[in-house]
Image (cartoon, rainbow, N blue to C red; front, top):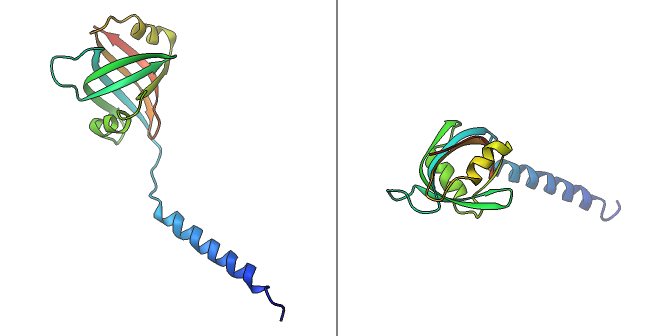
Length: 135
């Protein structure tokens, strides 16, 4: 019997078992596309303490949004969990969308009330804007 022939086989078996064990430890998190509506004030504070403070990035321009209210219109996450997921990051969300929608945000005056509706994939900070309302 030749020495060392069994070593590669043993290593291959150990690697296969270790990889299978590691794969079982990772929880499966299905990707989902969420529809979210975020309402708040640009710049300064609203009338009450904000639910979160988000920094939005739209083509390099940064906007501070004091979030008064958020709704998950489609998806299995709570609005509070979505805000907790993105608020620690700067920018919190990168906005993408039609120029007309993003222009509404650009032309909004400081302290304006803004409602932004869009799509977001779980685990991503990209936010695809479908509607911006400025009041």
